[in-house]
Image (tube, rainbow, N blue to C red; front, side):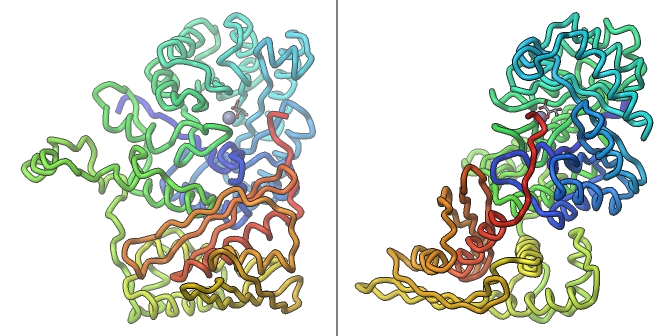
Length: 511
Ligand code: KIV
Ligand code: ZN
């Protein structure tokens, strides 16, 4: 390997900006731990000034993570930078990432600032951040539509002010690989102090080119890529980490750099992010889709049987794909359970939590004989959600269906600690369940999405239900898993309602 390519993961920040992908602090901690285990270099944990919840999450990630650098985002404003520094205080290694728009349209229409003011404010912010840490990243937002000479001027100034990483964002996903690569190469060649900083890229996927643009920039000298698991992110998303990393690794003949990632953790991280956000991975998604390593055509199968290299450019096991390996069953003990969860990056704070989750595992193993890693992930997600301080807590559900009769559901739950019961009829058992819940909660939410996926295969598989609701423009996802999909649906709907009515108001970094 000639050179190191730094992987900067922004699943917890830009990824969380996907409508409906908001995560709780505990969920962020689980993802951060998995990213650390995968040896991601930098974890952008959030935007601390956005809300108390964001601040607390970044602080908690900073306290937990020891092997990756933890980064907080800040607009080029004193209060943002101070807040980010405060959240990152206890990190073993921290970075402040500050940004200011440099494109004519953003400066004129959004910032209402003159170019000279932008240069001065960018320099001031980088200097302020340097008072807290010597690891400061600056992003000229909308660099992909900025004027080249002005971009050079801003970047030279912020490097002089102390920025150690310069990130070139294609904020609106407007660029094409050949031109974007060329832009990064020209910046590196033309800025006199370019050798004093690492050049990075942050590409959005509006034209489906985020990975292509990122890789083109790497070929022209970028040595950090900002990306997210499963390509999660604002609008059409960011460059998918797994695609960038595997492209560079698979085409070592072309790239003169590589990452130090443990790629065998990729599949686990992908599943975890998908489970937590409720954003399913499309089956034909590169690297992590269910079909990514499946050969259907007879001629392909024949070739693979003779030599895997005929149709495989990567090995499934290199990305941690060993399809639903059975690991535990109803005779497995507490120790085996704990060890397997630890392998998956899940640790319990105390024995009581472990015991409670083990009891759930036993109940599941009674219903379903083979327990796979994906079952365990869903089980732990469910346990964490139900353990949280929730407004509504699911207790039990009775649903009746009989051909020719109206389906009926009767649900029992706690609202604000008070036990309630409600029943309703509907066009099916799920519809009846949601109506029963609404008859008491009267949330005023609009249901935007209801989807069921089986976590593993077979009719005894757990169903994982995702519910997306919208209340006054605030979109949240709810998740629930159970071998009974009506129960999973009730849990998912309740989970969404708990999120809608949590006090978590966020500011958006680009506003
Ligand atoms: O897309 C963007 O420009 C960003 C910046 C904050 C880097 O997310
Ligand atoms: Zn972005």
